[in-house]
Length: 280
Image 1 (tube, rainbow, N blue to C red):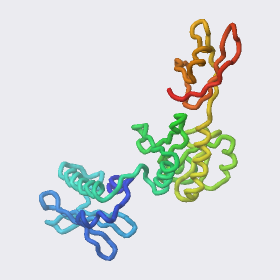
Image 2 (image 1 turned 30 degrees about the vertical axis):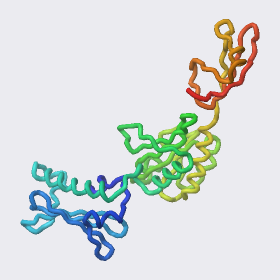
Image 3 (image 1 turned 120 degrees about the horizontal axis):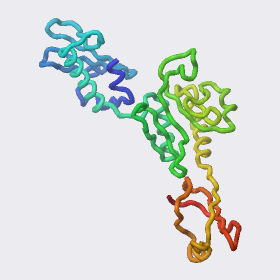
């Protein structure tokens, strides 16, 4: 449906409907607009549940015009009607709705909870999958969650229909949580370390956040490195005598907070310093 596409990832702000031009009758908001040089009238209704119903009427013939909804009907005139109708919908969406990151209610609630707790917003990295949002630990640069819209049959071949799922990393706890409802082996990630959760309120936001906390903690784990230093080329011993912080050429995939042990070659031949990566 055209309405579903236009209002996807949008949240209704009822306070803006009447100032925009809607009227309220029996708990139903109504709006009308003439298009195509006043030949057609668009009627939009929004019910108490926020459902949007749109109709276009041919005023000359006094009947509902539906040709623009039919794929088999082509032509410039039909396309013009469709374009004008979509413009009406988009204007309402832009003026009376708030844009959200994801399609479904719980997905947006979880995203807001992640923002509140970890100060992290979703990143949308792929043009081919524009609704896939990843959440990245800013300290380690590692993903700790990803929300994706997929067909339910990707997780259960006996079911179908679009859902949004949350992937989180649980490592050794994967088998424990796979016994719970709404939790499945990970879609599109390592099934040994990750799980997929259908965000349809089967699990409460509190339960989902507990799993996100585990994944976030795992993404915070520090790596440990051993790097050699030759005092013939750089007198690191005296360098640390003068300062607690040095700049080192990045020869590994270091992350902030990683532990780095510095092995000093001859004449010392042992690990002399334990350091922490503080910037890249």
